[in-house]
Every structure is written in C-alpha cells, then in structure tokens.
Length: 291
Image 1 (cartoon, one colour):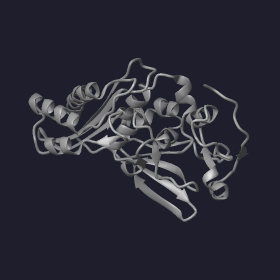
Image 2 (cartoon, helix red, strand yellow; image 1 turned 90 degrees about the vertical axis):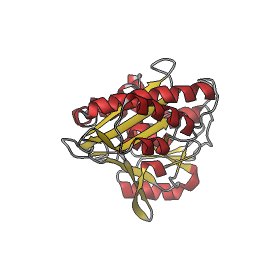
Image 3 (cartoon, one colour; image 1 turned 180 degrees about the vertical axis):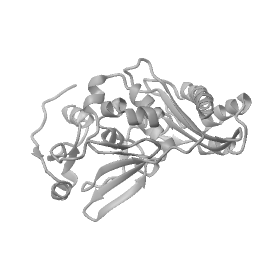
C-alpha cells in the first residue's frame, strides 16, 4: 500500500567532500540518494524508518562512468545505471557474464533509474548483479570521514538485506579485475517471469589449463541470507577435468551448501533442487566458453 511521503530535507552536494559533510551532519537520520528506485518506494510504503534528510549525489560531476575493458579491469561510478552497464560495449565484449546478468533484468525503466552500486547497497540476496560480481572478484571503494577504504564484495553484505556502510559513508566506485586468460563464465536465473525477482540464481567461472580446472568460482543468490560462495564445490573442481559426472556432483554439492527458505516464490526443497540444476548448467556453459 502506498502512502504519502513524510516531510524530509533534500540536500544536493556538488562534491564528494560536501556529501560526506552532509552525511555526518544527518547521522543515522540520513540516506544517500542515487537512483532512488528502492529507497523512494520503501519510503512511500513506510517499510523503513523515515529518513529526516536525503543526500542526493546526482549533482556531483563525474560519477557516471564505466572505464576500462580491452583486457583490463573495469571501474564503475556510483551514478552509473544498470542500463548503461547493459549498453556498454566494454562490458558486453570484455565481461559478457556481467552483461548477461544486467540483460536478464527485464524492465527498461528499472535499469534506467536503478544504479549498479545502488543495487548492491540494497543488499537483497536475490540480486542478479551481485553473484556475477562475486565470481569476478569485485571490490567496493568506500568514502567516509576517516578517509577511503576498499572491501571485497563478499565482505560488504550483512544478513539480511543490510550492508557494512556506516551512516556517514557511501560507495564511490566499483572495481572489477581483468578476467584471467583461459576463463569462461556463465549466469543462470530461475524466475516465474522475466520481470520477477529470482527464485534462484547462480554464477560460475572456471579457469582452465591443459584441460584441467585451475580455478573455480561459484556464487548463489536467493538461497541464503546473503549471496554466498559455494566454497566446498569450488574446492571439489580444482585440479580436475570437468566431465559430466564431476559437474553433476558439483551441482549436488552446491545444493547442500545453499540455505534457502520457503516463501511465496518457492519452497526451500524446490530451491535446493534448482541450485543443483543451475550450477550444473552454469558450469557446463562456463567450461565450454573457457575453450
């Protein structure tokens, strides 16, 4: 049910230092506004404690960018939309698995308004973007009153639907390292319709050499309080040839590593079964692409 927005103060800094000053001033009563897709909706529905002030970063110049590609890593700014990610030739050619994840978000309106980093800050375990960034080894640069720090994406989320940001901090950049040679990756999503939130999703990347898996990275979404790595499954694959029997075994082990709940989108039992299927398909496709 939508209700009337309660009064709040809108602050529009024109630099990152000014934004940090505003956030320090607002404290726990403030929120960062980028795309605002999730935040405004929750404010209208009174699903969160109403912020007294919103610090919009839209007027800060130079925050909408995608830099890198051509065999190098990527740097993504905090005002970069998911649609910009999808339309970027650097992403589609150099990081196709990331493009696949963005492309599977059906709504053009959502992708145009929603930012990549904002999607991560929402911290939903059903994110389509986060599992891919897990397997790509992404990091987040965070600015605060004490300076800047960089954290791995796996250390950014706190159960459930929370992140490590303090009220006076915000993410200034997302970085993704170059993909190792001999690697292939794939993203799989199961949803009721293309426009629906994922019931289960999975991302996998393998690095091959002489027909043997040197490195495997597998991430699962919507099956635990946060997006998770299937670390036992990764260990199972390392140093072995990825034949059908091993990949099927990996799918079953990944299902055991998942910790889903039952809700309106599916039962815990069904989700575990689908983890096995999606991980198997993702690994098969990733191995084929690695060739």
